[in-house]
Length: 347
Image (tube, rainbow, N blue to C red):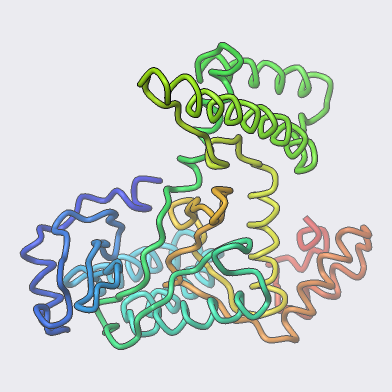
């Protein structure tokens, strides 16, 4: 199902242009508009464009009649669940309610701006912080068109896979050989009843510092070569490597991602309810090191301070294995089970 994240077969450009023209003055708004989308999901697709003042943006366009189609699909699933699986009806009702925010890009722009402002205020978002969130251009955002800042990067999953491939190559292995070795190690741990742990952030940092030292030494030799041999003989100059060539600290990116979303949930009370891998990019800071790019805030959820406190207390009670407190808090949160079994709530 991951193809639905950003690889759905796109609509033809004539249809997309007609939608944009019905919402905005196309000629006066855009200097350029690329006809080939850079991504297409279940509700809309995204195109690169340039505003008349030269600003590079991406434009998200909602598909025609998608609201009626998806609303009908959810209604059909809910009707089936009412007969066959009534336990799932509350969740489907929540999905149905949340879906309504996806069909008005003005709301998405407001949500995007709200989350962006919160993360900037907290010191978490910015070109050299933990993440970057695109700025919506509210002036050009309508019900079916969302215009926002373009983030330059690739999907985080893609970037991490490339890094693993480079690591395997340094070890003289193919990507598949490296993965096979990891699977064998995981199996050995599992047979002992243990779980294999990956490298920590600090362990990655030691490895990266070692590779960075090699990089600087090599750059020094290349500079000396360019100032002597290349300059006197006319031989081709050697290139230099920057920090984007260094290995990626996978553990730090995961830690950062958890911290950012934890801040959204527990501190700000509004968070991305659709943070699948297609909505997380790997961009670069000014020094070339990785930076998380967070996109698509069409699905956000807001929690009151009281609900956030309740959620935290449930987690603490679970961590303390306090069964009575878990049951009490779950009931306070409104959870119900058919046979009123406390064991079900704890599980």
